[in-house]
Length: 111
Length: 117
Image 1 (cartoon, rainbow over the protein chains, first blue to last red):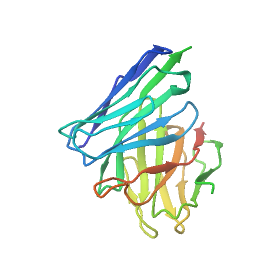
Image 2: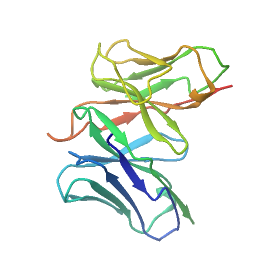
Image 3: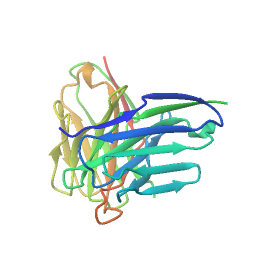
């Protein structure tokens, strides 16, 4: 069946260091979404990528969608303690009405 | 505008007890979802409702039932709780795709933390 894999599972950085999480799908995706979940909180939508090779930026966050639309990455420049949380990627299936989720990358930031 | 609300926030059940988790959204969304989140397992879809009056199974439906009461409300029922159902349960809703080929951005409630002993 369709799978979405994320690596790494955990990442521990010093504040100010960069961070990258990678998402790989077993099938071509029509689009990919990224969510952030703070500890004890709920997932919050960050962004959606649709086009092959698309790159989008949100302040210190850079999102990329691979040319083959099977992989994606989220890069955070100069991490801050407010970046702590788990970052999930998710891809659609079932007529775009359902999402299949990666297991997430948990980011810890040492001040 | 409260978004997606869930009740209760916390619940402890004994094995065999039943309960209903409530979810409501005020964004006029057509689609609603129930997920469970377990450590190391990510988010797994239990049931979803693409529109009022329809419900479909997700990845892990066994032991659960759902009711789409109206467009706003989508409830999840555990008929006979088991320790394996100890989890955090999230309700989510979504509407139209952001772009023609887009999926539906999902909005989540705060979650219900359920423990079954």
